[in-house]
Image 1 (spheres, rainbow, N blue to C red):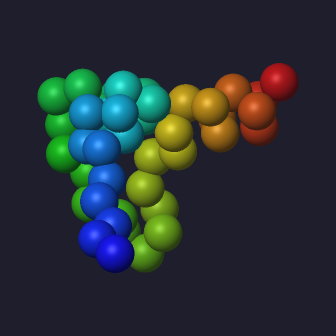
Image 2 (cartoon, helix red, strand yellow; image 1 turned 180 degrees about the horizontal axis):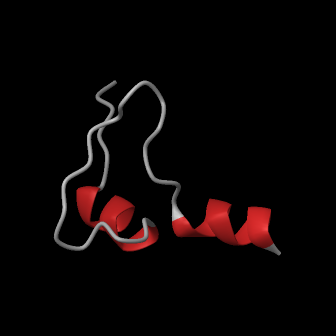
Length: 41
């Protein structure tokens, strides 16, 4: 089974990721918006 990620969806769900590429730096990547909203509500 082939696993794939929908890059457009991931970018849409991650704040500040419209024009910038972030690399996962030891688990310090930006959180998707639904996760951030849950943590801050």
